[in-house]
Structures are given as structure tokens and as C-alpha cells.
Image (tube, rainbow, N blue to C red; front, side, top):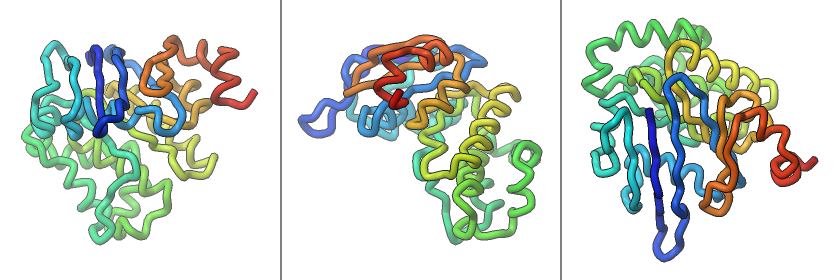
Length: 234
């Protein structure tokens, strides 16, 4: 479904991504793990074209997209849920969700998408008239994911969805991600919570200093001595 080939990215003279290649198949949860500043978020931004200064190839469902505009990529069903949630705090939960259905692909079915989001995130239905700025951290993350789902994604890229959340809420978010995949949306997940994300993932890649240094099944990497030592403190 998604094929990334030989991506190199720079911030000024500093090279952030170095010949990165990976792929995501339909129906998978694929996780990219790595330390802070390893280049994980930069890679997602290259795919969604919110970052334009990179070279290499990105193919989505057989179409090259590395030179497309971001809105055209969203229209194809490739949607990024950004790190930090980036909700509009002065708008209600419902208004934030509806902003996710701006693309041609999702605009016509906005009502149906909203009903779908509420069906898998019933807490948002309860909070639909509440200002987004008053939500708890976990609720805000659910709202951000729900807004991404409003765009009717075929593949949803999630950037650090567990960031800053209490462990019990992290479990809830990870369960939500599994449910979204089970409902038919493929997931590319960037996470610093190595243990939880590897438990969840079908396959995973380890990104270190801008390079892919390991790949394999999620459980396989979770049991890797190298991963345990570098990321789990074992």
C-alpha cells in the first residue's frame, strides 16, 4: 500500500533521514520506533508532504506522491494525525471533528463519518458541545484521532499518540488504534513508547540517527536483546 524508497531529508546542512526505505501492506499496523530526534516525525512529514525538502520516492497504492500537494494526498486517503494533537481549543469537539472532513473524498459523507467516529469513540459524542481546550489529555488525543478519521483514511499515520499520557490512558489509546485497524484502516504508527507499540504492531522498524537499523515482526523485536538494551532498559 505504501512504499518509501531511499528517503534523504535535511534541515539546513544537517541530514536527518539517511536512505530510509520501508513499506506498509494493507491491513497492517506498522510501527516506527526510535529515540527522540531519530527522524521519525520527519519521515511522516515527508510522506504527507508537509515537509518538502527531501529526495527519494514515496508510492501510495501504485501512485508516486512525493511531489504531490498535501491536500491531494489526503484526497487519496493518506492522512496524518500530527504530534501534539493541534486541536483548535476555542472550538467545540464536534467542530474540531468536522474540520477533518474538508477533503472532496470525505465532505460528501461527513454525517456518516461523524456517526462512525462517535461509534468507536463514544466519549467524544458525550463531549461534542465541550470546548476542545477543556478536554483531558487522553480525550484531546481521541479528538485528534477522530478528526483524522473524519477524512475517511485508507491509511492513517499517527505521530506519537501516547505522548504525555498516563499509562492507563496509553493502554486505552493503543486499544483504540487496534480497533481502527480492525474496522478496515491501515495504520503507520510513530511511537516512543516502545513496549506498547511493539505489542500492538504486526511489523516494526527501528530508526536510529536517521537510518533504519532493524526491522521485523513486532513481537520479534520486542524480544530482541538489542531492542531491550537500547530502548527498554533491560
